[in-house]
Length: 357
Image 1 (cartoon, rainbow, N blue to C red):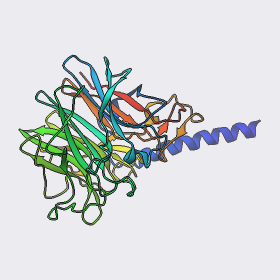
Image 2: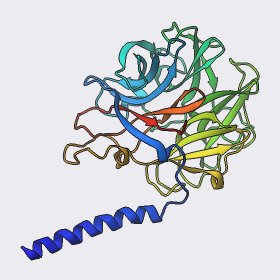
Image 3: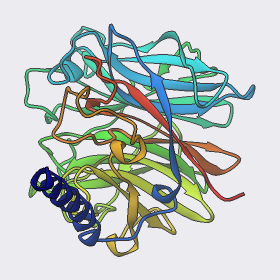
Image 4: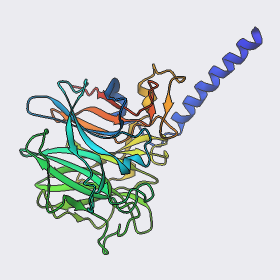
């Protein structure tokens, strides 16, 4: 009995040391978001759909709207680039429950740039108009994150639609300009996030350089509908992989929140990086902080025996999006490739950011 007890104590100490080991390898401090996140529960869930991305916005009546990428297949890849659609959910509270309302966008199924899978929704309000950005592709048989990804924009007077694609076909950005640093990027342009800055329109996007290095770029337009001009260099000085950007302003700074898939920026594999900039044109790693940790850091009540690992090696938060309330970051929405409740589908989560008054 004493031998068993001794082994148990040793095991506990090893777990404790392992937890501290990750803390020692953190490459930057925790951000004001990471320090103040409180898990609130499920935002969207449906046994008939897989979810990937939850972009929030509030209307003038205080209702919270989520624009969500979803599909009927249980797999994530290749279904996200074959069957994704952007669905609209509504709640009286930022914490839910969210109820399905309508489908905002589907693939055309025709010979267009957005034949397949509108995905990675980003929703903002500009003046009296709601602006929905998304990616789509022409051929889902290409490798994941293929070079045929493009970014589109649709506009509506209401979050309930109808949504009208801008220009002749909705496309506002591609990687086809031979004088740009991401010409013929083998992942095209993806993961859009958007904001208005001093009367101009900033569209941030994930792409690769001509040398194949993954970066976030910026395209700027004088008018909402474009044309959007890709700036002369990337905006992030990341060490390794990053994606899933969301941009917001807070206390005179522009923040860009991205995932850190391999932990090369933050030291947390699957964590998030919160980049900080005065002008939104350059985000330096030395100014960055940890945006968030793994999902299980915030939901400690989960039972590891019930977890279903649907996609990915870690319980990371994917496609993080921030809901601003009264000019403060108030909630973070994100799905995860792990279902911590034991279901066979991915679900969207909501976490409150408990900022100081």
